[in-house]
Amino acid sequence: MAISLAALLGVQALKLRKSGLAETTWHQDIHWVAVTEQEDPQRFLNGGELVLTTGMRLRTAPEQRRFVRQVQRAGAVGIGFGTGLTHEEVPPALIAEANRWGLPVVEVPYETPFIAIGKLVADAQSADHYAKLERLIAGHQILARALLTGGGLSELLRHLGSMLRTDIILTQFTAQLYNSAAGNPSPTADGWASYPIPTGRRDACTLWVRKPFEDSGIVNYAQNLISVELNNMMKQRQSQRALSGQVLEDVIHGTLEPSEASRRLAGIGVNSTRKNVVLLAESAAHQKQLVSSSLPPELELGVTAVVGKDLITVVLDDGSGSGALAKRLSDHLAEAGIHATIGIGGAYTKPNGLRWSYFEARDAASRGLPVNEPERLSLTSLLLASEDVPLADMANESLNPLRTFDATHGAELMITLESYLGNNGSVAAVAEALTLHRNTVRYRLAQITEMTGYDPSITADRVQLWLALAVSRLGARHAGR
Image 1 (tube, helix red, strand yellow):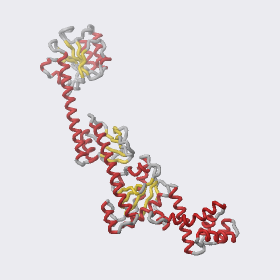
Image 2 (cartoon, helix red, strand yellow):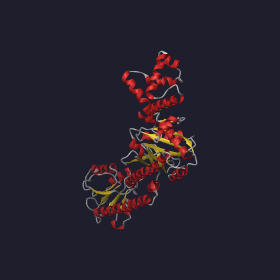
Image 3 (cartoon, helix red, strand yellow):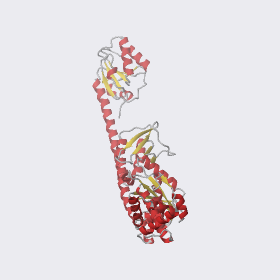
């Protein structure tokens, strides 16, 4: 271990003797030994040295006092004055000045070479270095074992805090993944040292270590381990989401019997006997980052999957907490630089309830707000959301003749049809709304019947045309997001 002046004096072979009364740095570790005969050695010192001199140039009392002041200002731990060469004893003026400034002085007799002192200090420094190195290697092994034995990040960080004898916090954006401090405080730049954890992805974290602590290099190693573990977690997350997505897609498309759907949902962690809520996140600009992004801790207990291009999270909830969870998810993604819209489904039991919640969440997300609460889902929205029903093609088949005619002749058959259906089949209301003669409205309705094969005055045909228009509007809204 590093050695102090007090310990040096205890080495009988050196025959050192204490001069003066000062003991301010008597037990402070000696960083190095500096041998000098300079009158002003201050510029050659870095602090923490034991300065050895024979006083060859220190002939007068003023020179001796000035020498002491320069050594003290440089931050040395003491002076070793060699006697028997230039001076037979340590000069009284030097001792008096050293006492005044609290700087210890030891007498080095002629028979003790300065190199013996230097070698003893160097050996102590070397032993200290090797001891620290051994502790560092042991620390590396402990941290690596924490991961390799399945302890994960929490076990690694627990060991790290024990080694540093301080509190540890790991944050991801503003969320805390780990906090060993009582009361789970938020770290601040004043009281905590921060270390970025680079992963090359948007889930980068920050390691916070409460001050004060002594870092022997273990924190740097911990940074690397945390980075590796975060990447492993990301790959596991992607694989799990892909597997869960396959199950959810089968449930959403209705291709499974209820009992089989319940069994497969249970296999990925969804209890369909209780109420579940679907949260759907979509992002056209950051789709790749979205599906592999981490989630806030509040959603970690849910089941997350990739369905199509969307990120789906199924959470056990009766609907009372889904709004707050969706807001937390939206904030988390925004902090990661991912601009997404979140749709919330209703809370239902059974596999069919999960389907319904998904379609509600998808329909809600189409409104484009950061967080979109569920609304009553129309039959049109549900049919359009189901990929098994080619409703969009049916709508286009019904309306395209009218669109083509309007584009070719500058007519307004589509506008007339929308107004007629919106006014519950009242010719008078359409004429007033479009500033047309009633006969003109009737003529246009006859043209619509001839081109589409559906008579708006007949209830069944009117429903077909209304459904086609509703699907057309909803499809345009989906295409624009």
